[in-house]
Image 1 (cartoon, rainbow, N blue to C red):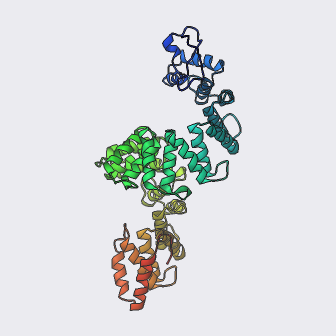
Image 2 (cartoon, rainbow, N blue to C red):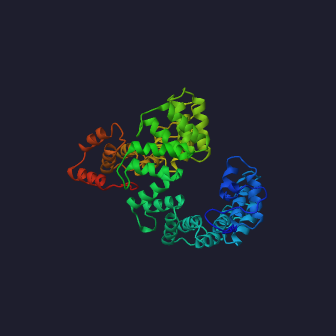
Image 3 (cartoon, rainbow, N blue to C red):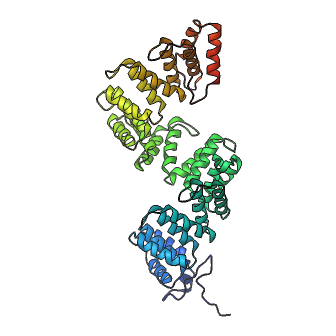
Length: 454
């Protein structure tokens, strides 16, 4: 029987008619050629890929387009990538249509257009591309370039996941975990996220580790969670590197090891992750796992703060308040605390309230003190709750109100991170209240929820 060459056969697309190729080389798929190029073996793979693309082989045009988009063995050239993707797309290559969507979304080699990206994703998804289905589903979930429709989004993510696409599996799992589209199911979420993690997707490994750590939809197992977080971090996922730093620093699911914590924080920090930068700054400030170096602590705090990180801004406030690596300056401390507080950092709000209460920095202002203590207290900060109670008890910056003061003292005392004298202050104040006032105070505390005032 005489064998003929059909370049459209899937999944192995044979490269036929290439001069000088041995039979074994002729059986190599274009995807394998691209893999060789990614490993640095540019020739003869690049020439073979070009020959196949010039022969109108759609899959070869797709892979050669990827090489131009990402600079694999050729200079980065999104315009040339788009030309090759278009040729492949015109030949019915659904994954090339998905890639054209990516160029449109991110404005590579052309003006960005979310709506055009969605048009390409839709064509790709209809053509059966798992990547097109994932990207279309994600666009529908967020309403990017198309009207938000989470029900349809989940439907497309399901199609992608069913084809084994790890990103589709992960995104579907996240939607089920978070109840997007009104359908929360932790058990199914765990199944999909685990599948994606097992395929090596680092963000899925990160989420799977957190589900194991917290026991969401599965039995809690913090030692196994640490193994998965380590896998994600080892693949370079910065958020996982930061978390590994946290877990090693505090001994969560792993043996405490501050030196290793510093290593992971540094990896995350070097990638520009603000959380890693703050963690590294704190280790330098404390001399934990690394030689104490306040100058380095300031440098890394500043880098995080410059990104708008509330934690970084708070760290800079601490540096200026105590004079860590900088000249002590209450005014600048207040400026940094304010920036962090306005982003919801509760400890920064409490500390800023303290500056106004005591007049540190030259400005004593009871009204402002109450404002920031209240901001912290409403958000569940135990110190802010105690301090607001103190102001209300004494009528400083607000009308004296023993009932509400008692309630805030009570909430602080019951807080996971209580102020050390909150219970003492509560009990002392209780002796001055009538039975009715005490009952009202206790009811206020009992019915309070995060985000509420009293």
